Length: 236
View 1 (cartoon, one colour):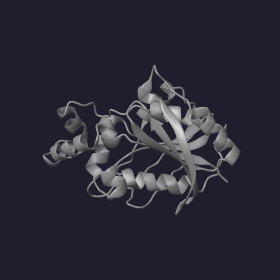
View 2 (cartoon, helix red, strand yellow):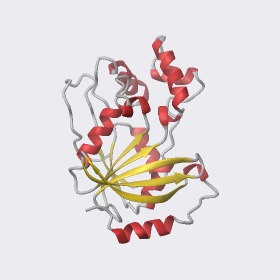
View 3 (tube, helix red, strand yellow):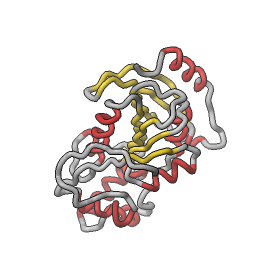
View 4 (tube, helix red, strand yellow):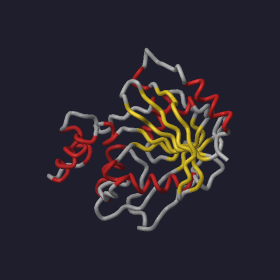
């Protein structure tokens, strides 16, 4: 069972006239919720509209998360090349599928899908960064050569989405300490971190090593090339 119809109606009514004139870049409005049967189990999909970036963002909800504590949550940023096409240059698709499968087996949980392509620099700039990587630069160097920080994402949107769903606290599926810190800065209570480690492939091993060594991601690059499910880790 997901969010009950009465709860959905309440959330939609709350969000109907919602606006954030002082922080439009992180403001979202819940506009629709529908059932979404998937190969990973029964989900609901919630559509959010952001009046700052003029983009739709999504929450894939398993079970009843309303006013719940320690809800497993994966924050996933859009990756067209990985998520849709199956690119081997990154681990995005592997992490998305592992998250949906694992959360689908829990009592409840959420996968937030944020439209922050290329760690926030956009699709065209991500491909420009790929060109630089093809020339020998790593993912951090490529972003900096284009005038960006290594990671331009802001998770205020995610915090607002969780608040709109009345989620009290979360257990976050991530290997990225910066993601934890940014969510906490936006007021999200995080009671646990769940490592989400997927095996590297011959193409993305160097990319993952750069994320580990230069961006602080908690990765074991030398892990065996076999599928690894998320596992709980005490604390954050």
